[in-house]
Image (cartoon, rainbow, N blue to C red; front, side, top):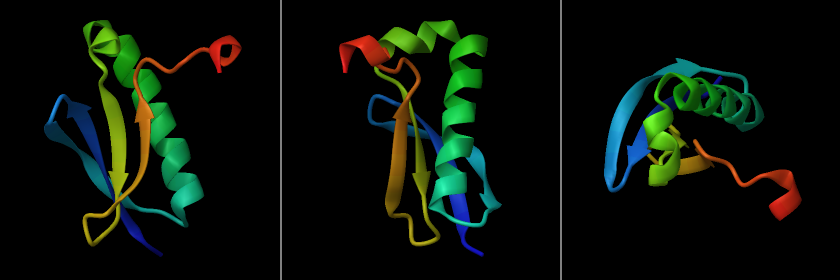
Length: 76
């Protein structure tokens, strides 16, 4: 099973939020979405700053990114 790392993206800065072995990118993206939701509730000041959670693989390739302040469904 692959290892994924999670970072809080603030501007051009990446703040490590940990890593975990997961089944696949689908599960990793779900975890990233959960983390983004939790961070936006705990640190609401990050919502309007364009912050995101990114997922990287073992080779440090970005494989997924989700914003802390997602675009509402009605605006897509």
